[in-house]
Length: 187
Image 1 (cartoon, helix red, strand yellow):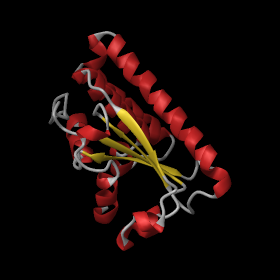
Image 2 (cartoon, one colour):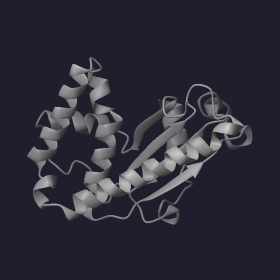
Image 3 (cartoon, helix red, strand yellow):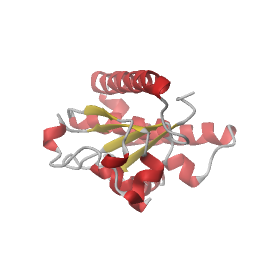
């Protein structure tokens, strides 16, 4: 089942976990991502064993549902009261998610700041706050010839969807998967 064999992370800004931790602790204000900074969400499908031929459509469907949900989340923030984008309300939302994870006995410091729900919400909040465009790109299953030797293990045969706070791929100045490749090399 692709849903269980998926992973999500925010790979840009590369210090997002630290920023979220500081924000939750009250040491940083909202917005903690600047307007001109690139944000990149990465969704990895087939994390453990890759995507089999019969799973490509399932992974693509999950990616489409994820993109549609992000569009809904951004619209909700853009069209709701500005109070929903105030620092204290966002901090409370993050703390409540932390409590939910604690109740589920899944809470660790890394888990809280890397929680997919929090990261997706963080992306939606910043895009709405700055009224930015965003786009998704789905790639794969990735082939051996598309990967360097040092990242083949975690990416060969997988599908990757990226989401950026840019209007389109041309605004990035590089291939959309470059930050993902770097993240796998250094992570």
